[in-house]
Length: 369
Image 1 (cartoon, rainbow, N blue to C red):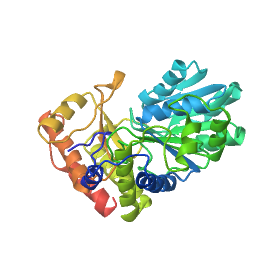
Image 2 (cartoon, rainbow, N blue to C red; image 1 turned 90 degrees about the horizontal axis):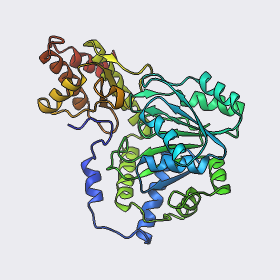
Image 3 (cartoon, helix red, strand yellow; image 1 turned 180 degrees about the horizontal axis):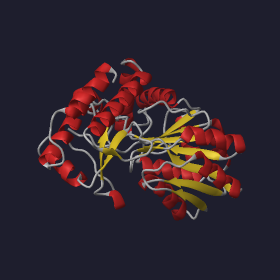
């Protein structure tokens, strides 16, 4: 049972769609598929424009940094992926300043406002919606609203790689939102997507930069249902399939409600057996538990209980474990995962097994408490 926060399991009906006969990307047949996929993406994003890139999410991060920073960037670093925005700036000699917090601590609205008040050169902000290194949720919408009220010309770029498809994102004040195929969209890795505001499109078109990641080139081409370079045809076919399935099976809002309930039930179940939830503001994409026994628990889950979950990175490599809630995870799978954690804790002498985790999970899910 794969319950890592990316890659997530690919549903069988999506695998079958991607296993069909290969088609050429410069044909009316594929242009029709591309156009349908593009419309579905515009719907899930709720933004003015969208582009698809044959890359991982990091490629979309690079494209946004290089295409949307004119003077200086402000990067928010509360984890491995916030840190990455700064590394991209450094790689391209783009001036940037960084707000850095511990990986369980979201940035505050006040910290961001103070930074832009103290540095008039900042014209672009880069932040994660969900920082998956620790599973925290930044107050992105609140930050964007306050920043735009102070200075509408500042571009706000949000990494939604573990947020799009998890929850409804208020994109009203966001200029670019990034996601990747291998997270909540339940595809293999290799496709990145960026939702864009009209303001961001104008900024990109006025200062076209780069070659492969030149977003001005891609926007122009993708408006005609093709791509500037070779399209990730199989992944785009799969993306159309999964987005159509979600839309026709209750809609995106229903998926968000199920994911939020699964996250809540998992957190309550794990807290009930003495686990410490790591982030101060947990995201619904995953549940992250802080414990010195994380490696031993993960090992037992994988080798004895057939549950593959993720650990941490860098300084919290052996201090956390993360259970995924993204995608079409069944209730019985999430229930078994928290049950397995309790069984592992019993085997390690941390807590006697009495079925509390499973009972709390099921009560929260089906009884509303």
